[in-house]
Each structure stands twice: as structure tokens, then as C-alpha cells.
Length: 211
Image 1: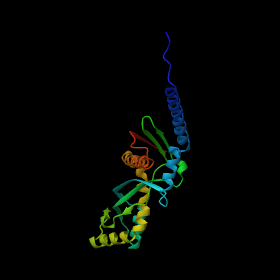
Image 2 (image 1 turned 180 degrees about the vertical axis):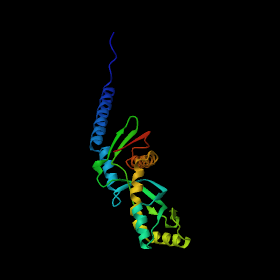
Image 3 (image 1 turned 135 degrees about the vertical axis):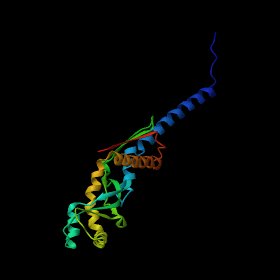
Image 4 (image 1 turned 45 degrees about the vertical axis):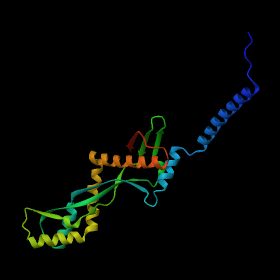
């Protein structure tokens, strides 16, 4: 029994469809190869942060206690021999340096839509002291109320030095699990913003690894 023969037009149409399919595959491959990688796009994303050159990951407000060196300097101004404690509320901003994008890395799983971000170790800026919250407590000493008020006023005028003094206390919180969790949350928001800017779409999950 003779098999039905395909008409010339059908054969030509089949060949054209095959050529079109091959051309589409080649075009997609060429475009994919010429498109910057996710890593390259992330580097550009970080470079656009200039002049900040940092990612603000979290902010907290906490009451910190000044060092004995600071309180001794404060007492010396009034020539008072006493033992005091000085505390104040301060805003602390936690950042991750971005001046060197090579210290960052990202990997994108297109199938699962998961992003992994590795960053440098976080740091914090100088605490912004709320001078109106300065409190002074005396220990084994009797200091007149007026003198305590004067000490507070002088400490407020020494705001810059007080911020420098409290920086060590603020840096110590970088190992606090709650603070690190807040920083990671901030970095995840940064990762999501990057995905939107790079037109990757919303990631299904973001994993943050801080060195």
C-alpha cells in the first residue's frame, strides 16, 4: 500500500518552522550570553550607592553607659571627687560597607528563585546621643542637685566626645543575636530591592551570610 506523499508546500512549511525554531534557540542563547550576569549586575547596583558606599541595614535606640574615663574627665572640669554613672539614650545605625563590591557576592538560582548574599562584616556609625536623656547617678557620694544639673549640661556640651566614648559600647552590640537578626532583615530588604532593579522578580527566599 502506497504511503501518502506530503505536498511540497507542507514540506517547505515544516522546513521553515524547523529553521525558525533553531533561529529562536540560537537567538536566546546569544542574548543570554551577552546579558550581564547576576553577579555583574549586583556589582553595578552596589556602585550606584556612591557616595554613601554603605548599606544601612538597621537602626536601634538604646541607653548606654559612659566609660569611667569620660565621667572622670567630666568631674575634673568641676574639680569634684566623686563616683558617678552617666547614661544616655542614643540612636545607633548599623551599616555594611560597600566601598569594595568584590567583598560581596550573590548567587541566583533561577529555578527555585532563591538568592544567596554574602557580605562583609557589619559595623556601626557614631551613636547619635539624645542630650536631653542624659542621666547621672551618684555612688557613695553626696552631690548637690544643682551640681548634678551642671554636670548634665556640661556632658551635653561634650556631645561629640560622648558619642566617641559610647561607640565602643555600640560596637559591642554587633555580637548581640537580636541586633544581628535586625541587620540580616535589613540586608534581605536590600536583596529584594536588587532583584526588582535587576528585573529578576520577587525571590522566593533570600539567604544572608555575614562574614
